[in-house]
Image (cartoon, rainbow, N blue to C red; front, side, top):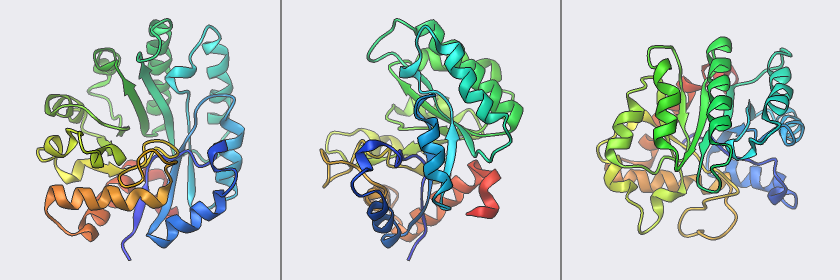
Length: 262
């Protein structure tokens, strides 16, 4: 059985309260044996850490999601930073970034918070898990000053154009996170990915969101990652086992701190 890594799943959230342990079993049955668990904000951090502490194959990332940025963002971000400097094992900074889809009220503050968390990644030599929605220009504006720094990470939930992919992959240490969207009938991703090297891609679910076909509209879970791998097998014209091996290797290079544990 091929080994798969889900680089982005929120298994600690309430959507899994009824069958969390069963979902882990279902994931293992299809070969998903390791999961990286991004935080959402200061309110979710303890639940996320407790979940990871209880499951040796689940690895925590800490950060503040851009939609959680509000007028108290500095105070709330400091709560998360205290965890980072506490010395406990953390595998990355995430989920961080920019989201101007729902509300632009805190555009400036989102950019400031994102910049601060990029600095955390540099200081502690940790990869970033970056969210971007309707904020591509702002994302590049914040990241451009760091283009020569040794940043690494994942552009989570990539759905952009070939031009977007080229710009993002100019940041050498980064991968594109591909999830169930690639299986959607109207998705442009299959065409875009034909020009993206498989060596720059990692797999993710973003569960409980974005379930792939044929589960679209249902709660997503890590077991469905195999459907993403199968779609990439079609796109790249290679066996699913090769997709699994290459993308898992890519994930291990990103999360190098966790190499010995995985």
